[in-house]
Image 1 (cartoon, one colour):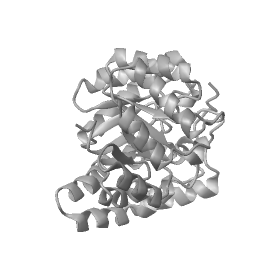
Image 2 (image 1 turned 180 degrees about the vertical axis):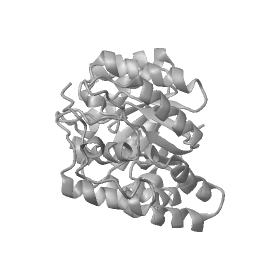
Image 3 (image 1 turned 90 degrees about the vertical axis):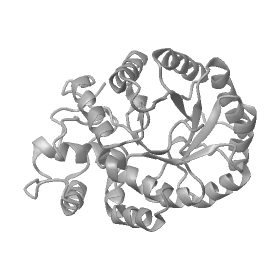
Length: 314
């Protein structure tokens, strides 16, 4: 049985002006996601800026999310690391908190061979008893899980049941689907390739777009699942420009900036990520206006909308 089917939100983490986590706003965002029919919440992933959190913050954010969701939809916690011991520790504690599954990114910076990736996922799996989603995002990690490796891991490592495929290479996704023959669930990690992945048998998407359009992203998936491929394709194409806008800078910079413009006090990103330059911000706001997501009066130069009031250092 799949951990989830449809559109799971790679949820942002809101920060206060002093850099601490804004749990009150986080709770409101979670409720908005559930009301918007998002199919799962992926907490403390790339979009959630987990790489800037210490362990206490990381686990507190996961715990808050699990308690707030209260079993209404699956919660999947990002617990991958370039330190395998760290990933095992976070994974075990996330399991104790009560998450429904784990999202484990490949090791980054120190990277890994394909054999090393196998041992990494096996070590995490041996330490827990809940499902694991491998996370392949070579543009950020410098490591690519080859289709042959993903299938070998899925067949031989007990808890690995799925992969978030964010290589951006649809040919690689196709090869993975062909080799897997159903032994592993595939989730698109690219919002601009949802329907392409679904056509290859993917179970859904782990989505940045869902942060601002949860119901619409859900509908891209479920239109396809319900047999209306044309509607699914049309929705994918309808929101393509918006998706491109959300990735015109390093994720999650644009999506948090968009959410601030839409009235969510989510704060800025933690350093080394910083706000978009005003010219790019103006382009993003123009796109948001064209979709009716923000008021036409919003200006990129407005510091209350465009910029967090303080640099978030920690």
